[in-house]
Image (cartoon, rainbow, N blue to C red):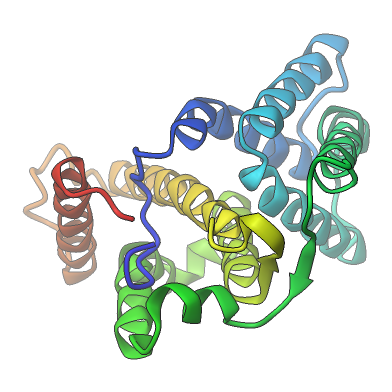
Length: 257
């Protein structure tokens, strides 16, 4: 993060880049299961396990935000007495993710060759990296969520019931919580490994937001009319999206630290 900006287009972290193509299909499979529409087939479960495995062993950051977000939304849907495809969700994602993350945790933190642990230390890494630039960090954070946040608020009547967006947003909030509240001790303290969950979640959130807008624009027939019938909401979201794309292109020459 550069002064707190959470980017959806980080490219200079190889393990995050490798795992990105697998994040979206896993995200959609999980959402499909939460909607109660997934059939518990052996092939479907194996595909989900394979995607989760690749992500966790390439870089577990996204699984560390998607897993708790999925469990929370599943519990909420249980309370609301809504249908969930429990077999595909638990066997295809939750259970194998818990097992693999536990194994990875033991391998990393319980090894005699490895020192350090994970501690609850609010804003420790922020202060370490950004020092006294707290206002700049907060401003950059607001700027990073401007596009998806504006879309969610402007179309709240539709977005509040969109499970894709809600899961993506909750994953991002958990990622931000990890970044601001957790810290590794020992030699990894300055690495900022808890940062990457927020970056990964932001990438998925941007894709989910753009997908929502495409459905909305298609429903209103705006593509056929060349956006001539677009309201201020459409123009505002397009402007914010364009600014995000421009910023992402600038990162190619000036990557975030």
